[in-house]
Every structure is written in C-alpha cells, then in structure tokens.
Image (cartoon, rainbow, N blue to C red; front, side, top):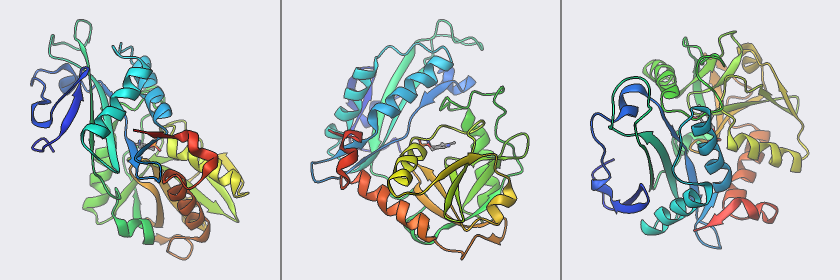
Length: 304
Ligand code: PMP
C-alpha cells in the first residue's frame, strides 16, 4: 500500500504518498490507540460524492473524545481534508481512511506528551468481500472469540486496537474456509462481523441485534431509513446465533462491505442459500442511494 503514486493529507498538507511516513517508535503502533474511519466516495451524475461524510467525521471525533485524544482539527477542517484528498488523487470512486494517532515523542502507556497526528488517504477499493459476494452471498462462521465487553474497550469508538479482536475472528474463519466471522458478545448474543453489522429477515421483518458490543454502523443507519421508505419494519432485539440459522435471510452491512448477503452460518444454509428478496431490494436501494439516484437523500452526498 505504501509504494504508490498520489497524495496523502498528513497534518494539514498534502504530501506525496511514499513520503507519508511515521517513526517506528510511534506511540499508537506500540499501544494501539489510534482512531479511524472508513468512508466511501461514489461516482454520481453530479460528480464524485463522499457518502455521509459528516456522520463519519463526527464518529471519528467522537471516537477520539471517548479516548481523550485531542484532535487538532475540527469537523470542518477534516471534512475539507477528505474532499481535498479525493480531488488530489483524481479518484472517481474510492475508499477513504482518515486516522488520528499519537506520535513518537514519548514511550510508556500514558499518551500524555505525545502529539496527535492526523492523516487521510484515499484509494480505489472495489467490493470488500468480492463482487461475487454481493450477488451470491457469503459463508460465515461463528467465532470462538467473543466481541469486547462494553466495559473492556469502548464499542462506540472505531479504535485500531479493537481490530486485533476482529483479526483473530477473521483469520479463524477464513483459515477454516469461510468468508467472514460472526462475533458473539461475552454473553453469547450476536454482536457483529469482524468489520460489519448484521441484519436478519424473518417473516418479512428486519431484525437486528442491539448494538451493545458492536459499532454503531453508518450503513446500518442508512438501512434503517431505506427500510422505512420500503415499508419494512425493523425490530432491534437480542439475537442468538440460532436466530440466524432459522432466519429467512441475513446480510452484513458496512461502508466497505456495503450490503453483503450471508448464505450460510456454521454450515446451516440460511433461507434459500442465496441473496434473498428483501436483501436484494435493500441492496439495490443502497446502491441507488450512494450513486445519487435517490433525491430524498441528496444531503448525504458531499461533492468533492
Ligand atoms: N462493525 C465493525 C467492527 C466495523 O469495522 C464496521 C465498518 N466500519 C461496521 C460495523 C459497519 O460500520 P459502517 O457501516 O459505519 O461502516
């Protein structure tokens, strides 16, 4: 990823991609406290537009607030930085990665005395789980690793070190031949995927787990709006893994994963074992929305 042409916004200015470096004694590299976002920009008739930029930027700043990290840029500056990166790299559609982290000014657990740095990179990134996954759905395995308890790491923050737990789960599932992992919380209820929220469809109703141990996904919130528009009821409750086994349909949501159908969990085929009709409607509605084909949500698209 580091050996590319292009520009990365780094501490207030655009720097050549290969020069956007940090020291090996970077505090965040050693102790894991970095907050980040995953954002997408899509090609629309009005030009390249970043999807829900305001909400992603607010979540980034909230992640920092939770961890008492003083980000030296406000929301407006970060919004501008993200637009600037897409423009500078002449990207029609892309994935954006803003990150705030502590520098190499000091060692020891306390970050006091370390400078907060901010970088924003953007690059072309197709379907996170593959184009076929979006059409046919994926095979998922329940992880033997639990998602963080709400009082262990703070689930409202998109924190780098949270992803060590995601990596354990993802590697376990993919090395066993599955496409992705489903993590349960410490009480055994369904939490989320390693990088996605989950929804089920049962008897025409959309069912989602309470997000106690999961990230409050922005795609999830988009699905809530689209479901309301399509007259699909959403029920939020504690979900068990066998609720997933007997669901009519299931799918993951995420900025990277978009709306990815789940066709199997733990070798139990879900519904007809393909992208179900409700999932297909919501997926289509999602892709229409992000591409600017739904006037009601024009305010969620920021042209660069
Ligand atoms: N949960 C986790 C662990 C994630 O990494 C993501 C992706 N950011 C999500 C859920 C979905 O969040 P969003 O829809 O905001 O991308």
